[in-house]
Image (tube, rainbow, N blue to C red; front, side):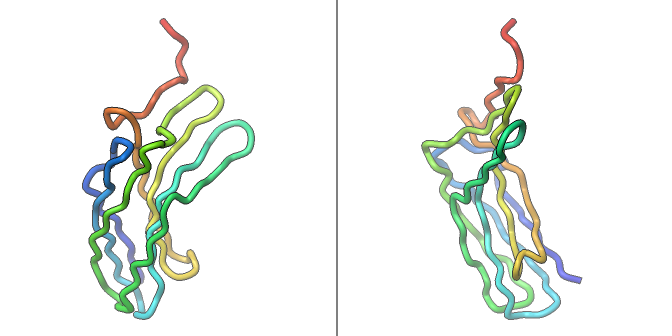
Length: 123
């Protein structure tokens, strides 16, 4: 059975910093495509959007491997935030082949490495 893992150094980051970690895979056979996708997406009412910020091919041709990665978090965001009608989330995916194997890790991108909360009414 195939296995994909993402080991991320920090799950909460500030804009303009680097997302670092290891992509680990143990696939049934070698020669498969393996890539990373850093993206943000919206959730909530209305049309859901998804923007891939960076895509990196990692495939080494080996069935088993561990690859260190470093991806730049855009300085202009958007920030992770939760609102009453819509939220913005960030994630990193490790994908093998034609998306038949995917593992996803949610991350937070914001000032002071925190999600901006706008889902509460002011006190």
